[in-house]
Amino acid sequence: QEILDASTSTSNGNSSDEETYNPAQLPIAQGCVALVKCSRGTLNAALKACDCVGSEIESGMNDGRAENLDFIRKVLESAKRVGEGMTDMASLLYPPLEIKHETAPGDHLWTQVKQQHQSLKSLLLLFESNETCMKSEEISNLVSNLKGAVDRRYDEVEHSCRDALI
Image: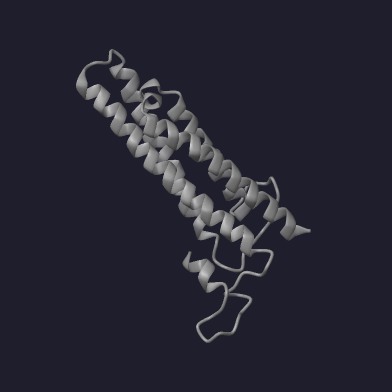
């Protein structure tokens, strides 16, 4: 949010191309910040999912101890990718944005956005694969809301990137 606020003017009220977003870049930055917030929400859901499954293991009521431990391992690995991707994407948000809507791998913002979207979707699908998680109304609702939000934010950034390149 600080980056977005700083993009409107510098400390002395004068704008600078190196310190601000142009009008085409601002919606991209806003969409990316929203995607960062979705990442934070997904990491929160990961904590809740691991806690829920851990409680199930602790209770001894479930025969699937090995499967649940494997689920927690997969969630932790996937959550690590989400966290690292969020940091990588956010580091590219300092103005001016380098927007290259291409499929070649690289450190370009659009590439990072696509990777983050995929990491988020993978983690959310992992939650849905665990019966214990989906029994929790809180986790089930979180996953449902986050899936929609992640896709909407990704679409916003994609459209804004295309508009900026036109």
